[in-house]
Length: 194
Image (cartoon, rainbow, N blue to C red; front, side, top):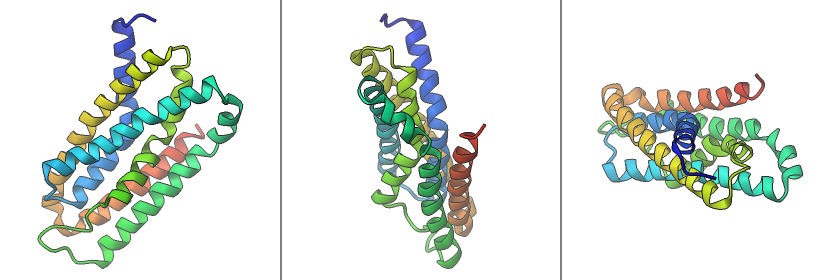
């Protein structure tokens, strides 16, 4: 495999496409916590980038080892994403409705929720392992690293936009953020059928 323009362009476009769900969830997290520090924005983006790189690599390994088992699991991916995002989004929605915000801070996103969001938004990236199946392991790792970098940048932008809009929305940010997560879960689910 040559590391030519096509390889890098394909990896960047693949990263951008995969990062759209993570961007939306990052936006929701920013809406939910308008006074978020830059360090936490980078941690959120790094978690999403990690999972967006990990899942294609797991898919690549599956293609090269246990491909018949992966095909059976592939049908469950939309259900898992719907369940995880629906749960986290429902929790945010409930807390946004029932809790009062103090100083514009509504139910901060904890590490456990971020990890669940990271898995939920990247689980469909497992199938990218089929796309990069012809790559050797070095090419697959480089493609995953490019996907991670693109996802990181897109998610930092998403969180930043969310924090700016969240400051203006104050008390309604948790409701909007939870609704976005539930919508994304349904979107992944519906998208898998068409």
